[in-house]
Length: 283
Ligand SMILES: Nc1ncnc2c1ncn2[C@@H]1O[C@H](COP(=O)(O)OP(=O)(O)OP(=O)(O)O)[C@@H](O)[C@H]1O
Ligand SMILES: O=P(O)(O)OC[C@H]1O[C@H](OP(=O)(O)OP(=O)(O)O)[C@H](O)[C@@H]1O
Ligand SMILES: [Mg+2]
Image 1 (spheres, rainbow, N blue to C red):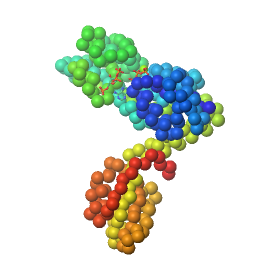
Image 2: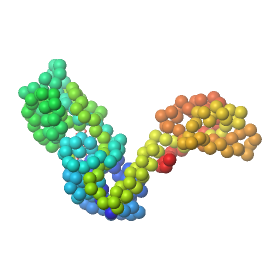
Image 3: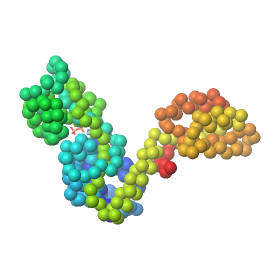
Image 4: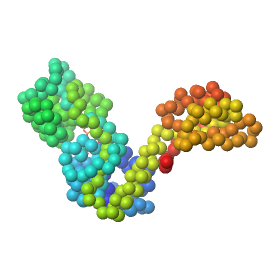
């Protein structure tokens, strides 16, 4: 049995649950109690606050965990990154009141910075030989300058709208972050096997992301040109239609190339084009 620690509620929760569900991990118990068994796969889910996930994995309370890179780096626990998951992308940045004249990091010398990430901030400041006072608060960091609690802040930024609504400007990006799958360093062989299966399933789900299955009818005289536009996984499937002189073509395309390809396909006489979502891809 492999025990997976995930965030019980918050920014990581939904995408983590979605990823696990697509990987065939369905919770038996819809009510989110602390520890939930799973049907159809030899794992159980442990719901924790994200702050506690790195330590739970490092100490073996959980075998693996899904946590933001920011939290993993901040906690500096002894666990390994197994896979970068590509969601919950954000950055940890320094920000100051928007009307301040800013010429460089020197601005922070002798100033007070509010943050929930003192370890990362301290390392960054000492690497840059800046001496500031770090004021640790666990939330609502962005309001600290306006209430006189600090001169600047160091916190999570994504769209930047929280900074704007607090009349702050981002002046330095210290690190980028995304959700990570982390693991305890000493898994038993049996747990390693289950983890390999989990990674295989996550990879299959992620390969399918942004990919579409495309079906279309094409006049035989333009088959070569159309096939060149649709490389597919090996090469497209071409099947004869009942109507002579026409074929049905099946392939896989990247969603971001979709509109460009469709226009070219139509110019080669393609008709009856269907585009269908793909759930998983095993290559
Ligand atoms: N605006 C955002 N955009 C993208 N990712 C974000 C954003 N805010 C936070 N994250 C990521 O999601 C993680 C969890 O954020 P959340 O705000 O739920 O944390 P929390 O309030 O500390 O939760 P908990 O109650 O579990 O301690 C962060 O550590 C970060 O990796
Ligand atoms: O740049 P933005 O897109 O505005 O995102 C950044 C904000 O998102 C997070 O807070 P969240 O909204 O999760 O609320 P919280 O303060 O309760 O954690 C984070 O703590 C920032 O405050
Ligand atoms: Mg937290």
